[in-house]
Image (cartoon, rainbow, N blue to C red):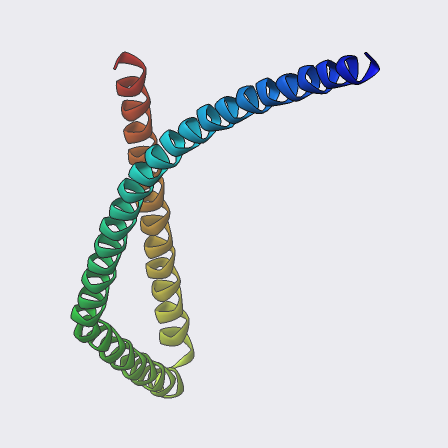
Length: 154
């Protein structure tokens, strides 16, 4: 009788184990299916991101090439500015030499009068530059005010 009870308990335990294993295998199968769906979705998104990255790299390469072309196009202008600067330097040296020669040969009264005129001319130039700078500042302020008014209306 004990053997029959032991056999019945063993059979019940084996049946419970088989049922547990079946539930576990079904649960694992369901999880694997969900993981497969997730991986498929991620693979699709990864392909889209890869294409976008490739497009972005191509656009960046084109932008760099355009910038390089424009920099090369500016080389002659930079050389011209350099040449103009050198010419201005030579003119400045010549003006200094002429000024020195005039100052040495002029009489005291003529020298004072010339210096006074030069001072007035420099003062006029300084005033003109100041006025021009103020005009530029006012213009910038009006433009900024106009842009801020446009931004608040839009």
